[in-house]
Length: 341
Length: 177
Image (cartoon, rainbow over all chains, first blue to last red):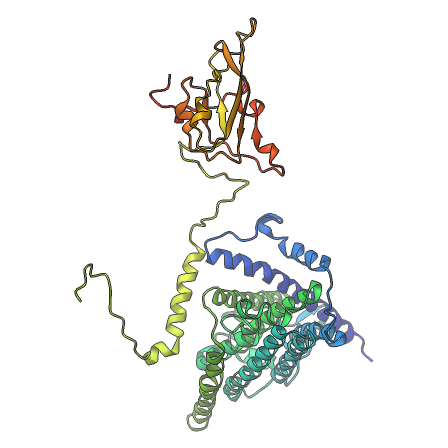
């Protein structure tokens, strides 16, 4: 048996794990900084230069805090909740192509853990498992606010997954494949899907906000109504895992958006530069991350601009607007592909 | 009814138009506003590193002045204590002994002089009342402390040091003696 593939993938998995956590950690910092800048403030700037060590200080604080498991809670599920949420958040990064293949001494090193031919299905499946992390955590807390937050989260995520899936179908009709790498490669040059499927992109983006529990859809954790939402009873690093996983989700969502609609690791003129393979691969990784970081910034930008929806408005938007709109988009795309192509 | 100022407008409750119901134009408008703030000058004062400029007539911790030869101006007349609306000032007067002429300007001086900084309202009336050019409010701040006693400032804190004079020229008035 060829062991090199196992070593390759292990290296990549560990690397991805570290990068995801690193990005999640620095997203908390970026969130505070961007919030501050958008509100004419400076944000954290005491820990290290420009406050760059702030995430480490926050993480240390999280670890040092007392671990509290409420007496009335279901201990096993209480611990399982954040574990599931974090695991699923990290698992989705496996199907995302982060760049072109590297070539180290004649050995091809793919920058994608698993080039699944059903990559999109896989990501959607894992994302929907993530709801269980919130639901179980909120339920096991045995607390009204946590339960309300969990119910809100699960109904919101289930509702928006429908519209999200439907918006992607229009895209899939065009690309004729479920493999994310193939979708990305089809967009080489400047043939980004966002130009062909703008409506699909907007619906997907809105749903991604809802899936990540971000403002304007952050109803599962409305501080004003639900104390802390589904993680009211959580403390110490279990709370940290929830918060971390949310930022990881945001990171993955940004990656998926840039892969599906913005050409992933491609940028206009990459092929015409005629670079050596490894340099091109590293450049493509940088391009991918630039796009991802832009979308993370976009998530935060929206958060500090918009107030949150009321819950009935949220449901109305999901079921009565986005879902029909997505279906109409599928029909139009289908008709166009059938009669004009 | 006729409007007096013409500043009030009549509000009509109407259904939103289709474009408004899309929300997207309003959202984009909002995001343009927030992104503009990203590049705007920050209003925060980085306090411990940068201290905000005080106004020239800021009224902070008092100083008991000395004259050019380093003698205390205060004669313990008690006018400041009398005029103090918060009754923050107390003092005990003493007579200058021979040989102390280099310490005190006149024959009478304050052997103790205390201001309770928790009572003081920093109105500056003591400064106005002083006939001897002795007490002034400065732009210095009171340090935070844990006990109430430490806020009663005695002569050790109030009287200016001979070698480090406190500049009060901004608060000097024409009619001081």
